[in-house]
Length: 252
Length: 121
Image 1 (cartoon, each protein chain N blue to C red):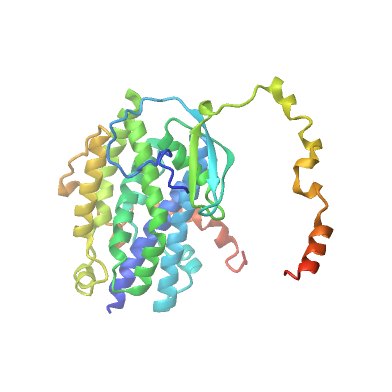
Image 2: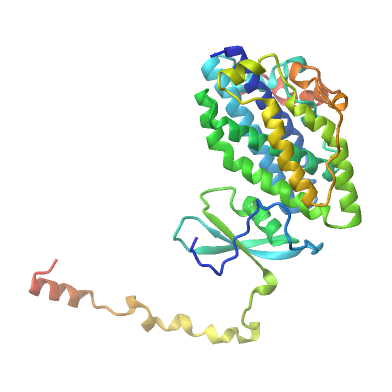
């Protein structure tokens, strides 16, 4: 199997999970209500756990550095996350909509990976599918509630959707390894994922009374998968690595 | 979880529901937790939520994020009926009625005597 192609897939998935996990954890203590504060923080922890598991595969199978080193000691350019996950948390409407768009793609991606020819990833996908299913249930329930809530909550959800959509489509940015991954049966590909995702979210968004914005190709925000990031990633990494950089040899 | 058809199982995957989510105010829901299939479903606390869907979603992380869980129940606090606090004296003497507990009867000696006589195990 093509090592570089699989690593590319693992790193982009892991970096997405790590960065959105870190972002969503920023709501801890300031969430809209106690129960939701805890649920959102708990899901953020799950995301960091998924990143850890994926880095661990890179470490064990390909001899890459250990997960902590990969997570905390890389340059911004080396990250493969899409720009959607880098954006600041904004107000709760945006964070919920991002969570909705991202997690639906994540759930379908992992479902597709349960039959991957790369066994470690297929195993992980089978293990975490329940966790991500809950993340999607959470996102759907809140989206539905707020879209049908008050005039203000509806308008906020719609405008968050309009803002997030060009970034969300950037999730499916292809790498140079796309064809190899498909040919070797590792992953059925970003186009296939995107098609399933669009079908799923269109149904939910429409049923919630919202309109899925139509984004023309030239407005999709690409770059993240190739190391071109928004201005928000660097400060996030500075903050995330602040403690570990103060004493890299410390045992936790 | 029992297969009791009277329990409402919410399909949280359904796309769009006929039921309108008009309840925009938070109410409290009593949460019950089941650790294993076949075990009792035990009251563990409350959550605030506007709908049963969100009550379940939020209860999952409040009460099901540590240790084993097979299912969770929620019910509106307002659907719970209890005795009036003035009537709680109906329970006052219950702890004294030890004759209702099997341990009250010291029959062990007689059982052993019977078993010895009839050579049962």
